[in-house]
Image 1 (tube, rainbow, N blue to C red):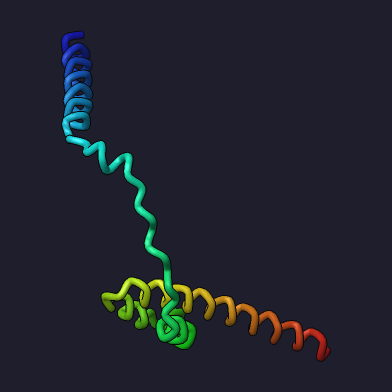
Image 2: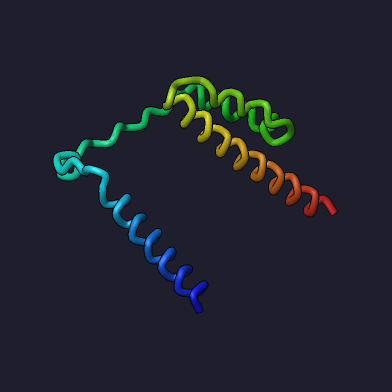
Length: 105
């Protein structure tokens, strides 16, 4: 019985400590009430084209992931959109090729 009481007291103690630690961080009220306009996204054409062209290499080898180390936010986003467009193009080409193959026979 004594062992169970010690465990319950420890659970309550550490629970209380976690609540106190969570509540002890200061919060700036000014940052809560001010609204900043989010940065608008501008598509980087070179990043998008490179993303489309490197999609097969991404799927086969994973090497184009090194392009994500380029320190331009819009380039990285455009590259990701290019990879997504490249995957969609590959799926579309595969579906069209499969449908042509079905209609041949």
